[in-house]
Amino acid sequence: MRIKRFYHGFGLAALCGCFTVLYSGQAMASYEDLSKPGVECSNYIAAIEEGNPAIFASMDSYEVIKQAQAGEQYQILGDKGSGWVEIQVGETSGVISTESGVSVLNVLDGSVEAVDLRTPEVKRQDLVNYAMQFLGCAYRAAGSSPSTGFDCSGFTCYVMKNSAGVTLNRSSRSQATQGVAVSAEQMRPGDLLFYGSGSYINHVAMYIGDGQVVHASTYKTGVKTSPWNYRAPIKIVNVLGD
Image (spheres, helix red, strand yellow):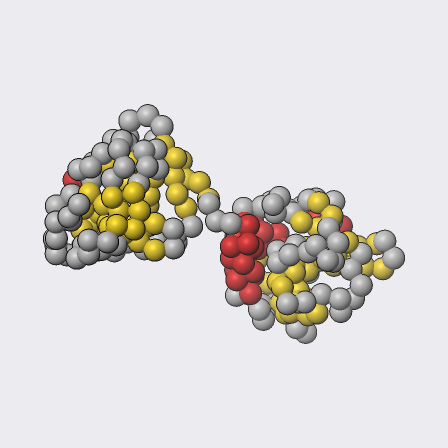
């Protein structure tokens, strides 16, 4: 099979690269929608309706990187012109013709449901990266916002909700009742460590890997990192559900 070569200009939309989609019903979209002014290509997917159309490495290459399968969906990255679109294929990208059993669907029209396909390891690293941007933020009693400051449980609440979509209870003692308890040998980045005196919990931190936690510590330090065992944790919990 040979691929026709087209060199039309296109705008490459921003893409996080972490999602694919499932669809049901008839979506009100078509390839022609991609060429309309102001269209974000990342709002569209290429759905393989039938056959096994070839996905090519690029517009100027005959290399087939994959034979698509009916029922698969791919995030559209950009419009290459004349019916060809660039799509996300795993960690790379390729091009496919929308005239080969491929439908273009709009993820914003209600017919398509976004599905997070990041691996647990990637999700946890994304969570760590999100939390680390707040290093140096002020400590504030009962604080739960980077604009005004965090206390320990306010920090974990904010990070978990805004990065992982996990809703935590507000106090460290209450957070310790959520999720599944794990051992120090089992803990992974994103797990929560609880500290206190005896069995009384009064502090929470998040494990970030390499033997370190990040936490809203004191008025003097604000959000900082520490060795995970700078105090002996009373409990370690996985609240991410993986």
